[in-house]
Every structure is written in structure tokens, then in C-alpha cells.
Image (cartoon, rainbow, N blue to C red; front, side, top):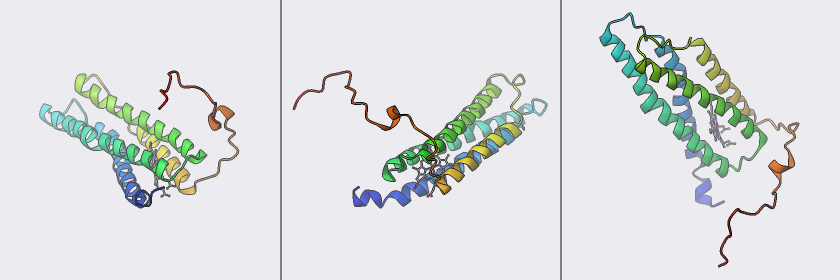
Length: 170
Ligand code: HEM
């Protein structure tokens, strides 16, 4: 690998860790903020709280998720981390993204169905997010071999297949 490219790894890692702190912190905070959406409070307060959750989700938490995923994807290639612990980590990252979408859908429904939509009990998303984050941290920091997982040949060996279109000769 080019030397200058390898020297950027600490920067990508710093960006990755900073963004995921904001992402996971935001995902834990948002369900707690959603519990404040009580239609019994004054309309003005309800509007303020709704704007706060909407803005936190759209301009802080979602961009942080995108930055964490983009920086993480760069790190896969820069660190050449094509190993089982990374694939196991990605399973938990996928779960984290499902929880992210669930919280987002609740925020949208609160805006579109005021008084009708009840946000989820915060203990559910908060437990899911903390559980995923702890599992990811254990995998990424311990980097277990996980060599007992047998990957099928079609995932580990080139299949010698042809592209579905002709590549012109140069
Ligand atoms: C699509 C999403 C993600 C991808 C592709 C990804 C990928 C990576 C890669 C390749 C590394 C470098 C590992 C190494 O240097 O050996 C890394 C580092 C790290 N990742 Fe992720 N990651 C993602 C999301 C997350 C999330 C959601 C968390 C935590 C909740 C996380 C926590 C960390 C930590 C703490 C490190 C530093 C580990 C170290 O330097 O030893 N990552 N990530």
C-alpha cells in the first residue's frame, strides 16, 4: 500500500470513532426525547419538542451514521480487514441501522399523526442500541479468530465466472 495512504489510517480511525460516538449517543438520547412528546402539553411546547427531535435526527444523528459507515468502509480496505470478526461486527451494525430506521419512523409518525402515534417505550430501543454497541466494541477490540465458523467455498474462493457482458480487447 502507498505509504502516504497508510499514514492516513489514524485520521480515518479518529473520524470513525468520533462519528460513532455521536451516532450511538444520539440513538440513545432520541428515544428518551421522544417520551416528552405528550399531546397533553401546550401546542407551542409540543412543536418545540417535535422540532428538537426532528433536527437532532436529521442534522446530527443521521449524518454521523453516514460518516461512521463511510470512514469504517475506508478502514476495511486500508487495514485489509477481510476477516470473520469484521463480518460478525457488520451483522450488529446492520441491527443498529434497523434501530436507527425504527426511531426515524417514530419521529415521522409523531409529526404526521400528532396525538395518534405513541412513541416506543425507550427501554426497548435503548437496550437494543447499547447491546449492539457493546457487542461491536467487544468484536473490534478483542478481534476474536472465530475460526470455528466454516464459510462455504463459494464465499471464499473465486468462482471463475464470466461477466454478463463482453470486455473489449485493448
Ligand atoms: C458499516 C459500519 C462499520 C464499518 C465498515 C467498520 C469498520 C471498521 C474497521 C475496518 C476498523 C479498523 C479495525 C482495525 O484497525 O483493526 C474499525 C475500527 C473501529 N470500529 Fe468500526 N466499523 C463500523 C461501525 C462501527 C460501529 C457502529 C462501532 C461502535 C459502536 C465501531 C467501533 C469501532 C472502534 C472502537 C474501532 C477502533 C478499533 C481499534 O483501533 O482497535 N465501528 N471499524
